[in-house]
Image 1 (spheres, rainbow, N blue to C red):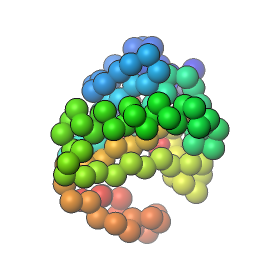
Image 2: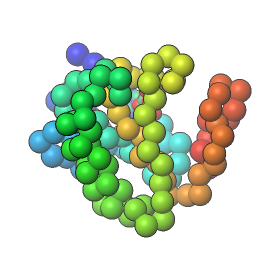
Image 3: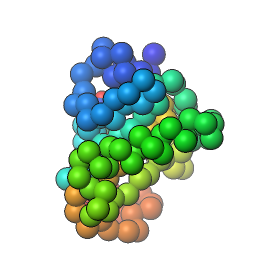
Length: 118
Ligand code: 5GP
Ligand code: ZN
């Protein structure tokens, strides 16, 4: 079972921000900005490559709800999903980074760039 499936099953503790029947949002263990939340489907999907439009429909509404709940919907934020090796995906369970709480930099797209987003 993958690490995020273990978080879904509460076998690994996490700081949960929002949860419903289909999705879970929890704070990233290594935040890159003042707000850094991961939104994941409870059904294991490897990456964005495999997700269905049906699942994305619910995911979109869920991400919007998370942003509102943590108060970054008005100030703005960024949603990122890394895909595969070149995309820098480290955990093989589809996840969307919801990042905000500060003015974010743009242009950290290769390993030679600093990873800090603000
Ligand atoms: P990726 O590089 O795959 O797009 O992002 C994986 C993210 O998961 C990273 O930002 C990393 O900090 C986060 N992460 C990895 N393991 C854990 C964990 O056990 N708990 C939490 N909350 N975040 C994790
Ligand atoms: Zn999984």
